[in-house]
Image (cartoon, rainbow, N blue to C red; front, side):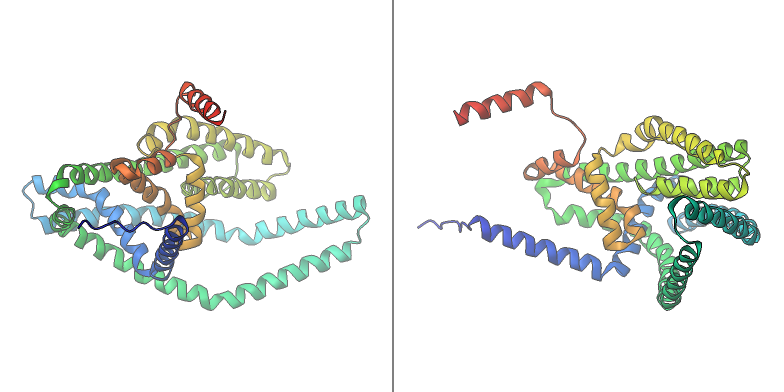
Length: 369
């Protein structure tokens, strides 16, 4: 007697799927303090693994090779942070002057609005004072939460190097575990997925670093030519914000425009900054990203925006940075598993041939007749 397979109706399958998806998302949200640093550490360990292998090939002990790699990595990060801090300190010294100039511009704007729209200046001042008071109260209420976030951030900052060291040290065990987990029949497929996952992450993050360096140089040089103060910190911040897909670029151009507004005698510099940043974005979108970053991560713009916003809602700013690499890995896995290949195609940016689409449409019309 043969056993019949249990066939569930569509509504039951959909219910199980959405319940499982909701449970998975809740797990990711609740355990984000554990998952986020672990994901960051895993990605950085994958990027640093070739460097460790380089030192190992020089007959250096594996533990010492990992320690040297981490030391050099954090030395570079520390030097970069020191440069950024020195520029930020210089910027903060001039902050009161910038505030005074901005207040003067605001008073002129209020006078112009009052004269052209028949609104009493007192009402505008009252509204500004009320809004400022609300922001101050909101900021005061958020101080405790901010301190908690900073405290947890420091804990994560110390945890990530430990995670990276252990992942690099136990790399052979982790790879062997993945191979054993999926059985002997799928070894070649598993090996290909693991290898390509490493390649995708390494190329993407290295490309991202190169993009940030090039953008920082172009931003700084452009602002220096225009005579905008604090060109270095604004250029570097713009490059770092540009790493956040689609959203960071808007904030990156707003900062130098605000500084140009309060430091220059004419508002034309706002248009100059906007125009030159637009030109830099064209270079970034048409040359840097396609040939350095996106050449290894074929994700279409629709799902890129969706996952960036979802990553922000789920894990905050770290989620925005992690969203694209994670989605690239998900697409890679979907492309190598037969039942999931349609999902991999949906996430990609490969357009089907126009002739094929016409044939499908014509076939659908014939069936409907």
